[in-house]
Structures are given as C-alpha cells and as structure tokens.
Image (cartoon, rainbow, N blue to C red; front, side, top):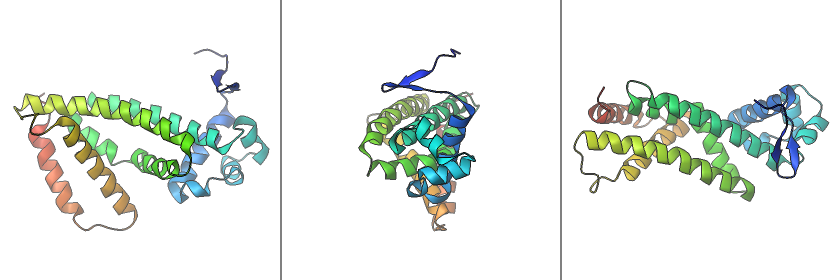
Length: 197
C-alpha cells in the first residue's frame, strides 16, 4: 500500500491512527444514538482526542460522514464477498442484511434526507451491493427452474433485503410482532432456493 496520502476533493487524506479512530467513533455514536448526536465535540470525546483534530482531518462534518460511509461500504462489500463464498450464500446474505452494518446503513439513509452530499455516495454503494446480490438471487432462482420473468430477481432480492432491514429496525425499537413468523418463512424460502452445493 502506498504511503502517499490519497486525495479527497482538493485536500490530501492523511491515513493515520487518529483518522481511523475518528471514523470509528463517529460510526459508534451513529449506531448508539443516531447521526444527530455525532457532533465534532462528541466524536472527539469518543475518540479520545481534542476537538480541533476532528476539523484537522475533516474540515466539515459532511466530509467525516462521507469517510464513515465509505469505510463502512467497503467493509460491507468485503463481507458480502465473504458471504457469497459460504456454503449457503442466500442464508449468509440474509444474515448480512440483518446485521449492525445494515443498521448503520439505515442511519445514513436518514442522514441523506438532510445532507445532499451523502445521497450520491449512498446511491453508488447501493447499486454496487444490489447488483451483486441480485446476480446471486438470479443464479439461485434459475438453478431451481423459477420463472424469472414472473419473479424478477431484482424484486425478490429487494423484498428479502428490505424485510431483513425492517426486522432489524423493529427489533431495535422493541417491536417483535410477526418476527418469528417472518424468520420461519424466510428460513423455508432460503432453504428451498439455496444454491446447490
């Protein structure tokens, strides 16, 4: 890996322990308390650094949020690749969409309603993640002789992904109505259409 700093806009991105700590602290605050709680002072306190360092590495909060989003997106894409290499990739994708990475993703979607700079980054990541997931669902459906015209893989993929995220969101709110039934239905669906070994 090159030791030269990468470029972000017109400013160099300084890769350092402090920068990584600020990104991790911001993600943790967003998960625990929501994006609105991630102020520069709160992030600095969580990372154990002086507030001025937040602005040294990230001149605006938008730049910090984008760095958190990009780091999380790359980590999630790596987890997706790992999930696809598992013996039961559909099950692994369901678990991935039900994990804390999905929770942070939903927090970013809420943030995007208020910060336009986040929207295009979210859309680009969603396209990358969705394309890969859709291709696996399409492969699984075709391998089981499912009519992909009647049941388009993009739709089936979106239904499963959205359902996983809704269950995760509701669980965080203490809502459990229908969750056991949904899990049983999904387990049956995934088992039925899982890719052959």
